[in-house]
Amino acid sequence: NAGVTQTPKFQVLKTGQSMTLQCAQDMNHEYMSWYRQDPGMGLRLIHYSVGAGITDQGEVPNGYNVSRSTTEDFPLRLLSAAPSQTSVYFCASSSGLVPNEQFFGPGTRLTVL
Amino acid sequence: AQKITQTQPGMFVQEKEAVTLDCTYDTSDPSYGLFWYKQPSSGEMIFLIYQGSYDEQNATEGRYSLNFQKARKSANLVISASQLGDSAMYFCAMREFALYNNNDMRFGAGTRLTVKP
Image: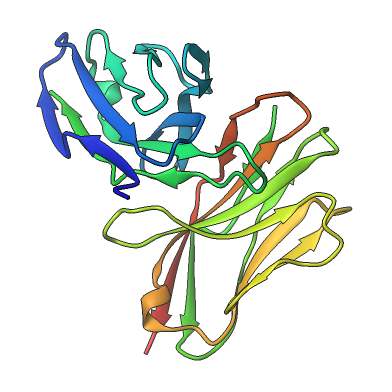
């Protein structure tokens, strides 16, 4: 099993550009999430999904869109990149069964100039 | 809204000694789970230990144990016999279970642990 994979690993954008961060998991997990990690702030939840076709907002959803057309994939779209979106982005999946711990991808380091 | 507080930005411990990393939480949900993750300098997130709100005994996983004090709303991580490889960021997290299909897990700001040789 590859677990949770994310692409790209690094990305530099200019302000106003759009892009999609890819996330895939091969564990047949129903639950998937996107987090951003900023220094001194831990991980903050952006969006999450509890199954194909179902998504919901987390703590910091503004400026991001998600969709979940399949169980395996959960892409995160930045609509118009801003310097405040410079961060490390983590995708995670979980089974939905207790303890329901998150399995994390390796992260994407995004810089917006 | 749920909230996780880790009051120790950084901690130092001598190799082979035990260390306690503090975590307090705030929730009105009677059913919840508490998690600890380790993030080494390489950046990956590693799940360490879980405690359910209805679990009567403190969770243990090898050298990791969770000191769960429900009335105080604290869930401190205890690492025994520290090793150099334990140097990392440690995050406390919580998920509330009352809502059906809730996938909202919140994290604290983290504690950076440094193990001295």
